[in-house]
Structure formats: structure tokens, C-alpha cells
Amino acid sequence: MKIDDWLLDILACPACKSPLNPVPESDELACTSETCGLVYPIRDDIPVLLVDEARRA
Image 1 (cartoon, rainbow, N blue to C red):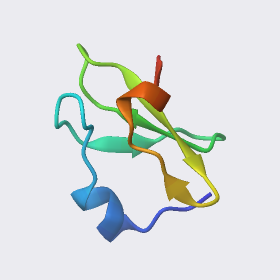
Image 2: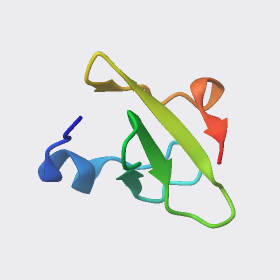
Image 3: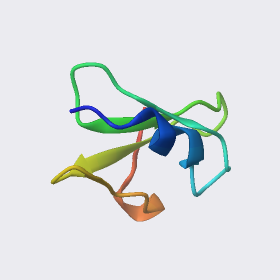
């Protein structure tokens, strides 16, 4: 799964507002904050940025 760079530049973690990075070999986006650590799924090429749908890393 490839997310365009321009989209990654504007996406942020809804919980702490830190940038998100794609998780290699997975359809997920991980929060870059050391204190937050949430990982959000990508379903049907759409990032699901809901805290209730996220998992802890």
C-alpha cells in the first residue's frame, strides 16, 4: 500500500496531533509520538483515523 507523500504531509494523529508514518509491510499508519503510540488501520486504501479503531503499538 502506497500513500502519496502530499497526503502524509497533512495527516496527523487525532489523539495527539503528531505526524503519521506508514508501517512497513502493513496497511497501517503509526503515530510518531513516543507517548501516544497509536497505530491506525488503512481499509480499502482509506486511512481510518478514529481513536476507537486504533491499537497501541
